[in-house]
Length: 429
Image 1 (cartoon, helix red, strand yellow):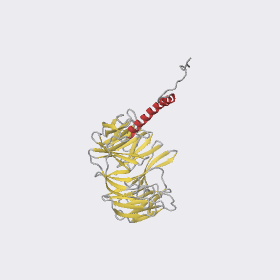
Image 2: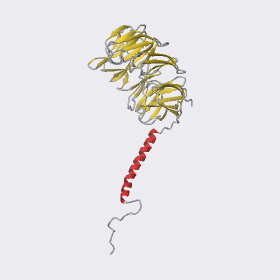
Image 3: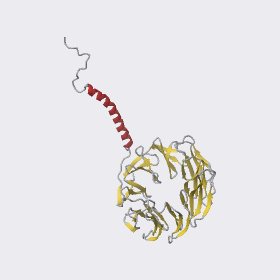
Image 4: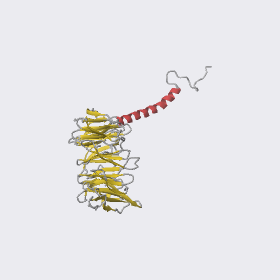
């Protein structure tokens, strides 16, 4: 009798063996997951905007260790390199106008340029005021015993240089650098508004007050004591000061005497506040119905309210009578500042998940176009996207290896991640 093999597993000829059948069954879900991942990656990183290459007008190399923000003043660019030198370049050609060596690395701070000159500080505890035309040091102020950056904050204001060091708050005479006054260091942020220095300071028990001091003498001019425990200066906007108080309301102060000039307006903790074209708009993060409101700066009356496109708004910026809003759902919208009406809504430019720059330059408008700057810190990359201002339709994008600063004539000054500085011509189409 032939052996009965019906109950046993027979060898299978060809490729599809039992072992390979098992691997095939397992491999199919893996392929599906892999394909989905590739599709997700492509959808996230593929960019539908046509890529354009800008024309380089000039480029200058500098040390990669540059830590100060470049400043454009009139027809010059002020640059601080990583070796203690201040450079003044001709904006049109990139040629050097003057170079001044301060002998020590710069503190991580922003250069200041005013009528008095160019203000810079170094890690060895010196603050120098340079002549704008020649770069010559008009005076140098040294802080005794400084082993770290000499100040937390400094500004040129009127005929004074106001400096907050680790031990004191001082006012220096811009003519000779001599100390005109000194006060105890204050807690909180400082602002200069004309001839008034605005200081937020703690007064114990978790309470904060706002103080207006004379820039010239350092003497207190007024004190604002809110009824709430927390106070935050949201914006100093000529000629008024916007103060957020948590919880419950937003107040507007006159910088001359510190009194409230408008009725108190509803306000949420961590709300976004935009002041633009005679209207102040408060937007609650992750807001829902009636959690975005706009008020007139003349009398505090409500101009419009409602969720509109502000619901779930992440970032808002005001430019030339419009609000630009990025939503959590990936939409990018343009709204009318006076009515809150949505003018258009488009998918947000840039790959999903990338951070919108928290600078005043992230949106730049021209007569017919909107330019959006998006930053990816991990890859040290910036993108500039151009949309039609009237419709929001896509136009083009540029990939940059540095931070762009838009000029009024359409050019871009790019501070590269490698320390270089270059002037680019922005595409016109």
